[in-house]
Structures are given as C-alpha cells and as structure tokens.
Image (tube, rainbow, N blue to C red; front, side):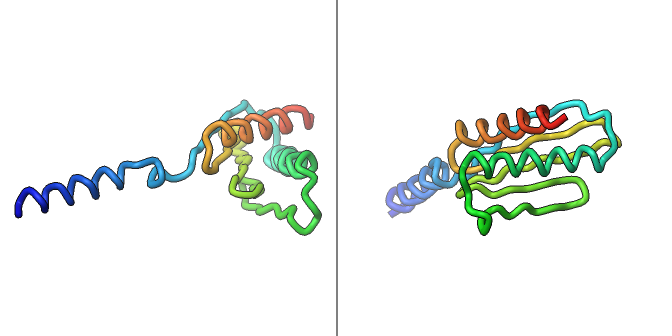
Length: 118
C-alpha cells in the first residue's frame, strides 16, 4: 500500500515538472535611454506598430495597451513589451510566449525597431 501511494506521488511530481507546466518563455533586451519619457514612449509605440505591420495584421487586431511606462502588443500567443524608465536612463524590451526562440526573436525585433525609430 505504501509503495502504491509513493508511486502515485512520484508520478504526480514528475508530471508537475514537465514542460507543459513550465509557463511561458520570456526573453529581454535593454538599451540606454537618455531622452525624455514621452520620446521613449513614442518610439516604443512605433516599435510595437512595426511588428503588426510585418505580420500584416488587420486594423481590428492591432491593439496597443498603454501604461505610464510601457507599450504592449499581443501577436497571437505572444506578447511584446517596451518599457521606458528614462529616470534611470533605460528601456527594456520583452517578448513572451510559448516558445523560447520566438519570444527571443520578438524581443530582438522590438529592440531593432525602437533603435531605428530615432
């Protein structure tokens, strides 16, 4: 009886450790941002919009969420964020979603778009 209970517990723990329980992949980049907050946010919004343009998303799917420091875009099961903290002279680019390589690619494209938006 003890052996069956222990086997069940071990199976449950093993299942909880499987990748399906791992949650989303998250990747990031950062850059020095020696500029006013508003300028950084304008570049952040342009970077997010460029991702939508490349994906040929219809206007109805081009939602940009805005906070005091960030601009967010959702691309299928992925989310991209550009966070401006200019009082600390930094901007952070985050990509998250189910697959690490794609999340990393999203963070990289946001970084490239923001940098090119000078």
